[in-house]
Image (cartoon, rainbow, N blue to C red; front, top):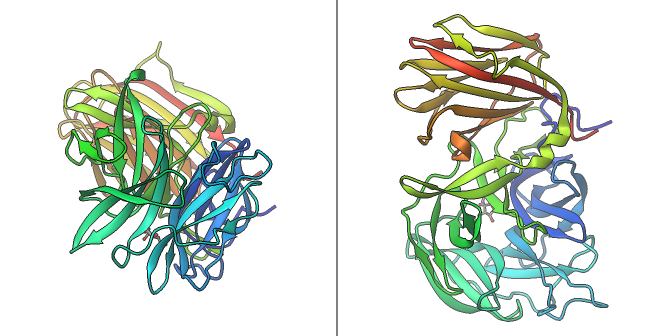
Length: 444
Ligand code: FRU
């Protein structure tokens, strides 16, 4: 039972009760992914910020535990991150077990950076000598801590408003307890993240990514002290209501997995808001330089049920204008839809999934979904779309991962049987694939 309310996303994490915003402390420790989050256990609007806590062994099935961090005299528990302190640099480990350490902002009269630690991943103790970083300016927040291997030290990226300018400050530390200012960079607001990714999957060619709450990002170099951008600020997601995403630390297979707060509509529910799908990040070379790619994590395939190949590659479907190809699906159903098409003349290629219409404007090279227009980066050959539909929204992956478009929409409340269709309008297109997987709920 439970987790079956009409507007409860079925394979996106949401809190059983209360308000949720940013993902916090994303980390892999002792065989489990930990997802902490900004949580108000006492209401369905923002306030009383605690760190909620959930764990998963596969990023898909989450189990909510009790809140991990509670407000105290230093303030509310604002956003932050987590690391495993493998070398026990902090000395907080016990019996040879590396500690799991959380970094949060205590938001009170002053905003200070603090830490809490655990060896079992269940109970968390606030560090007795908090804060580890005093207030720089009021409102400074959201520490993201990483291990920088080449210089063998810890690095903290933290958001600081300095004389009206949004900046990210970088600090370094040998032991997580004492921090030294290293440098700053301008132009990013709230919830920074900093990580390295291989270019085109080549481990010998790595670049650093600096991103923040909007998911806009810059690619460049980082020497342990200073971030040197090599690109302008680039758009991250191209949808709606995706914010404050954070990547997981210490993932054993080296994947860079990113999860965001997804501002879905959950009116009338005993909870509010949800997380996005977990996304695997990559870097690809394009004509304009390197760019981030977003791919749903492969573990989501576990949710697949019945599969239908409506259009198969060996029998392409030439969609003449306004002749839709229709297949019926269950109302409010959970689906993964894959579509592959090649427009042959300018016009609109249209895909309808129940009440949602996804239009691709061939000439403008834009997707239009529920009034939201998104530029689709140019790719060679066919457009391949993957669309995940849950009760509170759809997430579209296009342009070989360069276009991630999350769109909140209440498809769960649609009581009528519905259908999936493809057509072209004002132009011609050839569809090479339309594949529909029913998905199971991750809560059962
Ligand atoms: C981003 C944010 C953070 C802050 C938290 C408070 O959504 O404003 O900057 O730490 O939410 O809940």
